[in-house]
Image (cartoon, rainbow, N blue to C red):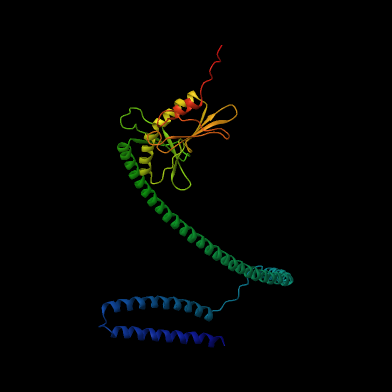
Length: 346
């Protein structure tokens, strides 16, 4: 049986040698192969020959062992090593069994914990997705509200811008109107002899300084004008209605002031001499006494140039005789009505 086992490798070796000789013969026959292919073929053939040589050497060694078998050499201490290895294997086997049992006991609780953790993880993932959806919806709502507020602010800003542009246009228009009015006022002041004195801020009044009438060096006293509820101007001093517009009214006011200058001068002189109460709005002069009003004198329009003086006596008193002058003045009437007391004869 050993001879049959050794004969089989010999047969295979002979087959390999025959194949090698056939390959060498085929290589010698193909002499007109291109150089690159031939080099590659030779390199591959050399590598295969080296491999085959190594295999033949191993085969030769094996054949030598088969042809000349020797007594088996038992290594020293083999039984002790075998028994020690068997004991070590038993220890490893028992340790492995204990480890397997411990793992088998610890595996179910671990699997239960893993399943619990997985279920908890699934719930957490679901809660996270729900929270993300709610947060996304809230952010979308807040973003929509913010965009709405932004649009409202932009609309307000645009409205404020339009209002500011309108106010600027109105301001420019008012400035141009004020410039035209100022230029007209300066021109009117030069032509009419009236100078407008602006009052302090917060007082709806105008102070006018009228020029002197023709032929007189002194100017008239300053007048204060205040806007009336009807849209005109009223004089704070001697009350004379001044209809709008201001330009023709100022001309009329200046004419009236020029005409009334003698009256003002006469009233001032009489107030220094007699106890009088002058009411410019009624054009009335009251002569005061110890118990009240003694006489009342009314001035007709145009006094002293065109009008006269009417004397109104108290109740129960006969009207006095007029002065000998054809057109008595206030001074003549007062000198007639209010006579100084005369000393009795001794």
